[in-house]
Length: 281
Figure 1 (cartoon, rainbow, N blue to C red):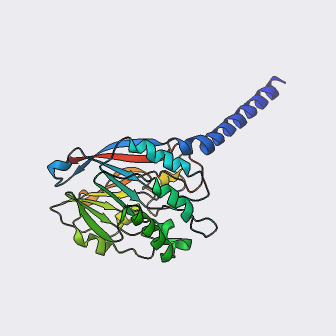
Figure 2 (tube, rainbow, N blue to C red):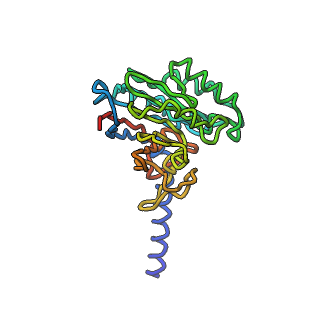
Figure 3 (cartoon, rainbow, N blue to C red):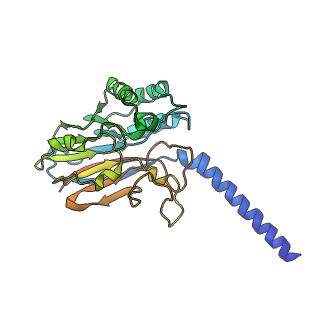
């Protein structure tokens, strides 16, 4: 009888823990914003940019899968840090039954966070609509961002106040052309590449590029069992989950865990905004 009660108690305890874990992963962690503070040493950084800040926001995924007010509230929190540069590294939407949630995205972008020196963006795969094949969706999002004073880089670069930003269009989209984007690379300048999908880091396209690559796309897997790697990562190179990766030829890859979610579930992978402090090497 005692053994039967022990088994019953153990089963109920496990069921209770599972229920609480599920509720946490559904209702709590998806809205536990974490601001990550990191140093960003950059070759050839001008003296007047030393100590300035660059904020990375990625994968806001505006749609019907979670309350987008969380994104607006997160922008307000992040704005307290008064970033000098802000970069958005793709995936602004999640389609709603094949439709672009343009009204919701407009409200969010009207409340978007801006840098005091510059605000830039690139597109992600979801920004190309169904099966990443709708250029008209990408153009709609691009126009909306530009209307709200966010410069969109689509295989092009822009030199702002001594810092050269190189933006790739999405790897899975219709307009991926890294050779065109890197045409402006000058080794004597301070450079940062914005590239939504970190798998691009493994392509034979980089030549002498030797600086930072800021990516998103993975969401850190959204669910990460303790002490294990995330079981679901939408990349070919399963080593690319989140955080800093030192690559060959002096390149440094940073993968942001995403602010939004494809689905409202996170466990051991909190939503992230990254705040870099620029330093010279």
